[in-house]
Length: 422
Ligand code: AMP
Ligand code: GLY
Image 1 (cartoon, helix red, strand yellow):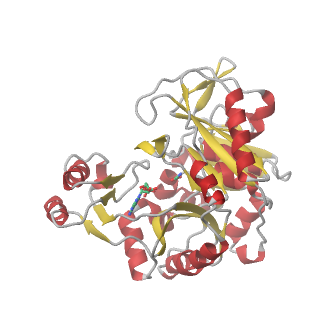
Image 2 (cartoon, helix red, strand yellow):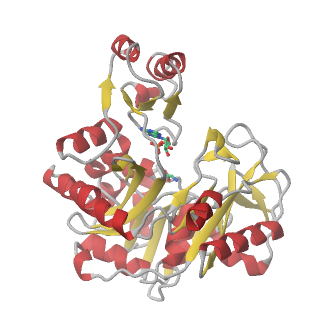
């Protein structure tokens, strides 16, 4: 069987490594992939949003199955295009990917189907948004409607900050078209949980829960990033919380999308906040999370391709999905300065024995040497019977890996471990 994965970061590396366990896959491609993924799949220099070239490649190489991992190609309709050409895909069609690509759509869906989320108002007029803010309680959250590389969310402590955020999006067009409409929503408090799920549009199977660490600095300070570390399972996501989320959020969302004529097939990511009034949706993503995937997939016991095909075929209800009992941790090694400006081209050394649990996010091969090429460079992971062990082993592995100007948070898992002690 010939399989291609679209994308080129740490998440795609984790997907590729898991798919490789399936012996029926004879050829595995990644478009564009990266210098680390090249160890596990054949990388092809076609960008994730070059849809016509992707289709051409898939036809020429008689690809049997495609996994579209990033949000951009999904929002552009990569799955629609490939499926129309007869290529089976994992990922939602464009009309379902909108659950991530338009926050206005997502908020409206939740409102109409009574799915718990932060109260909000939507604005497409700058003056109306500014006038609303005058009497709104602070802190408040300002979000750009469209995709913004995870940077379109601003938590304002004061009226001045909120006004600045709205102006940056609506007047200065900092996020281009994505900021033409803004969502202004209630500030929620509580522990955050990420739950990735498989869904075929009817059945929803949550994967093991995870916790992201979004801020750049230790103690959850500094700028928001794409994620500086993850762990799974998330200790806040108890069986009672899981059951409540299933009934109040997961199932209602999947059924709502089907009812709207937008059946969601693929990985639906629930970003949740466990507030004192119960779990609420912070965001939906129409894809695997990065770096959540790096801790979730290593714990998946069932063959990944089998589950993905059950999703595509609409047979998920008949496909048992099992996870291992242990825990996993991932520490992101970034290039100093990220998410601001950072250097590139630093040679990376990784002991051979550690490669199994290293997922490469931003590195390329140059004259036979792996060198950094992005802000987030490596996801250094470990799987162990318990969370404290997984964290310890991930940090030990970090200690054996070297590149100049490497930066990583030393406190990944600190909060999660404190839950265990409480
Ligand atoms: P998002 O890109 O939507 O995941 O938002 C980024 C981060 O902003 C989330 O992980 C939360 O920590 C925070 N956030 C988003 N919405 C809210 C909210 N309504 N209240 C408090 N924090 C929020
Ligand atoms: N780690 C959060 C995301 O993938 O959006």
